[in-house]
Amino acid sequence: MLTTLLVIAGPTAVGKTAFAIELAKSLDAVIISADSRQFYQELNIGTAKPSESELAAIKHFFVGHLSVNDYYNISRFEQDCLSILKELFVNKKVVLLVGGSGLYIDAVCNGVDEFPDPDPQIRHDLKKVLADKGIEGLRELLQKYDPAYYQQVDLSNPNRILRALEVCIETSVPYSEQRLNQSKTRSFNIIKIGLNLPRLQLFERINHRVDVMMQMGLLDEVKSLKQYQQLNALNTVGYKELFDYLDHKSTLEQAVLDIKTHSRRYAKRQLTWFRKDPDYHWFEPSQIKEVMELLNNLGVQ
Image 1: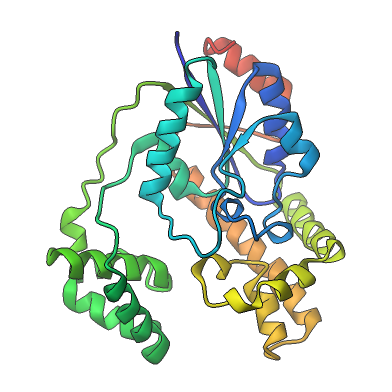
Image 2 (image 1 turned 45 degrees about the vertical axis):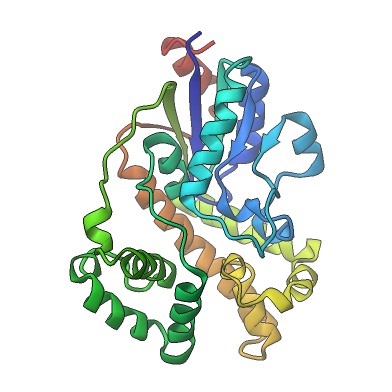
């Protein structure tokens, strides 16, 4: 039986969840979430998790399956997804992979290089460097251990730098020399659908979503997570801005404006990532009929 992994990707607030559920119903499919923020059971409002009715309409995997205290990475997500796909494809011709986390989608489609889990002491020592010297301290270490990767990595992203340093120190081999960047062969067909809207319309949806989140009680959700503020899972848009408010670094009005601004910037980065991949077929979220026609033409029933 020809099996297909149907990727539904796009920027935040574009309407991926509703679109994917409608498509899954038509295809008798289930959904695997590729939204790394929705993995955590404690993060609900600020991550725009599918509602209870949406989760009841179509079976979802990897929504709320972790705690913010759990260590998780892209390699584990790849392994977990491949394992569940093997089971699902016994009875399903099509499975949907839905989300806006490009790295996680690429991990399932193309694979990721395998690196050892970090030694807890190494991670602790590096986080102390970050706390004491800031990201500049990590940059200096990376330039020392792996000057080649220093020229490639996003130097404003402490998580990428931390991971590279962990691998360098753990293995005594530069991270850049261990990155194969070779796609792995998959036993299933892959079709990629990208969803987008005109920029002003997308930005209006983002701003409106933030207002709705605040009305739903996002501030109270963030207050309940204050003790976990330093965890990586909480270093995300919608939470870090409200932590700043709770820490008296900004007003509530400014925090909400910052969430909207940072969400719009995040959407731009998502689109830049997905547009680099020529395999995506682009549609607006209202074009479910056109997507079904494409899938029929590609032999997906």
